[in-house]
View (cartoon, rainbow, N blue to C red):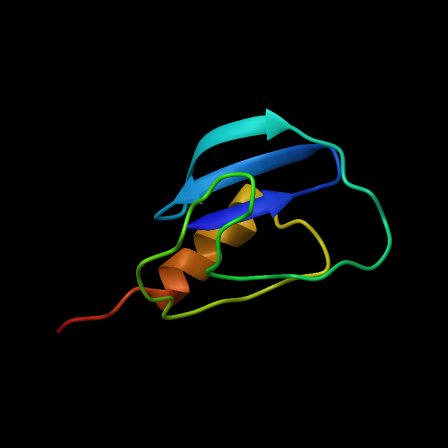
Length: 77
């Protein structure tokens, strides 16, 4: 699963393939990042594990997301 934001659009990817997008502006500046916890307005608690997490300063292109997905897939002989 990957989520990118280029400042105007949030894109959602699963297995390197985009499956949704939504127009969303982003404010510049500093912000806290919380991974694996719910937001107070959703009452959602994350019940699982995260094996890998990466945070990039710039929004990735679809090709970059796919490349990262392909590179992280297990290789079996």
